[in-house]
Amino acid sequence: MSKNEQVKMGVFGAAGGEAADGGIELGGLEFVRPRDIERRSFELIQEGLGDRQLDPSNEPVIKRVIHTTADFDYADSLYFSPCAVKRGVTALRGGCDIVTDTTMARAGINKRVLGRFGGEVHTFIADPDVMAEAKERGLTRSAISMDKAAQMGRPMVFAVGNAPTALVRLYELISAGELVRPALVVGVPVGFVNVVESKELICRLGEAGELDCIVARGRKGGSNVAAAVVNALLYLASNDARD
Image (cartoon, rainbow, N blue to C red; front, side, top):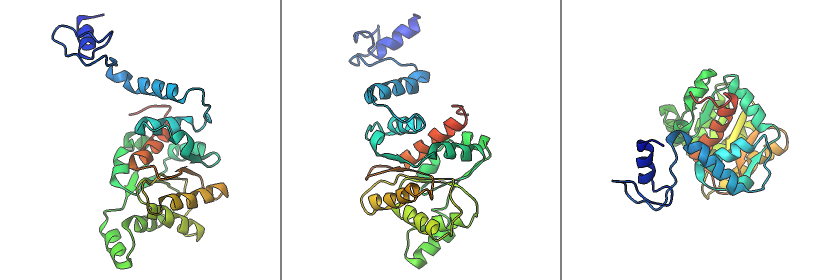
């Protein structure tokens, strides 16, 4: 081991917690090289899951969400319609665009990988026409954003991590035949008002075979979860290439 590595291990309090000369005692923290942090995280996730057997098709998505949230409840609460992961990966690999309900979800999606396949991420929440129409109609900007997405007239992946009103509007548009069937809906808004109910509407379509979807049942979710699900699919599509 090089002197530099010894100093790093001392600073991180490895090997019994003894700091090297000039190091700061940090109580036995595990030294992990930057390039190994994600790998080590997934090892700990597997340890946390124990003997639990996950569906191999859905496992990469579940683990990516747990990695993002440190919440093992997602091993139980994530709902996958049949073949949702396979079809989502196929769509992204084919250059399908993504629509998100927030700029935060958009920021979290790996656009370099998506761009390799020719796809883009769209977020309409701050568009002046969306803001004006939402005010005029007394609806949320998230709901009007789904209307604007419907006008694009092609299959897309919808990643909703914040607004249950966006999921409700998607349900209405799909049920009325006013939206080209999405390639996939990721429904993971977080909160209290109509969150559970909006997710169940999307699950209903999935269970009826009318929609491919991945949904975080219950109140938990968030824009970070939406991005995590999409990134898991992108990494499957790219054979884990990140750039």
